[in-house]
Length: 311
Image (cartoon, rainbow, N blue to C red; front, side):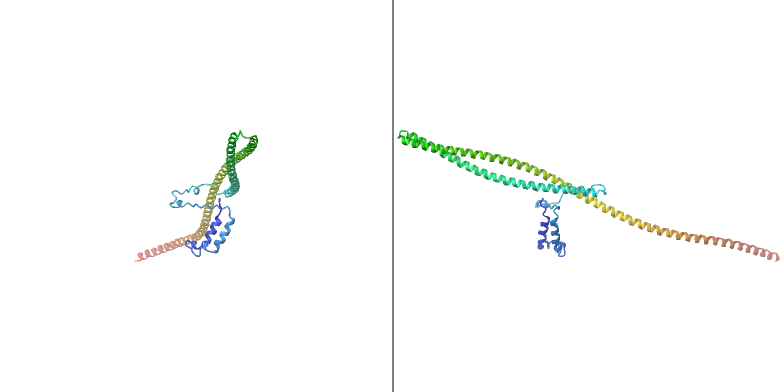
């Protein structure tokens, strides 16, 4: 993991001529705040910046978009537990990254040692080849001197003694060269064994690094899932808070309307009592009027009857 987001941001901020083609003059990236943000990003090493540099991936759009991480169902009241899990996973990820860096440094050191051993092996191989050539040369010279001693075996005794001494010196030198060759071969075998051990250690370290990288990838995936779940839970919590706020406002409006309706009902009841009282008074007045009017009609009828009798 490279963690070069701040460097990318700084490189982008420094290219004002390039950004002017994509940003307005008063945009945040064009102002001094962009440089401030670039400086603040230096301390944020937990941000993973992964840029795909393959141009072929940008030639076509993604065929299928996976919305499964946005459709998960879960309780909303576990944000603290999710934070604890995310913190633990971040600690594990940082530990695995540090271990990965240490393993990478160890691999580099072993690679340096392997290179040095290869150079030493090459040098020893060259020395062995030179020693073999010298041994072959000495053997040829020895054979030649044997032939010469055979040809001159009938010479004087002094000559034979000198040839014997020369032959002894040649044999001694040949023995030394043979011993040197054996020593070089033994050292070469030791170097080859050390190289094989180093290669085995390199393979084991590569395997360990691959396993750590797989574990790191799994932790990253789990961290991404937890971040997505936390984002989803935060969104649901915000939606729930908004719904509760809307319901509270609606409840307040309903209570206000209920109070208004209660006041209106109270006023209507008061008006109803007044109207009922007026109705009763009107009925009493009407009854009294009917009674009085009936008495008047009877008296008038009696007067009419009397007048008829008089006529």
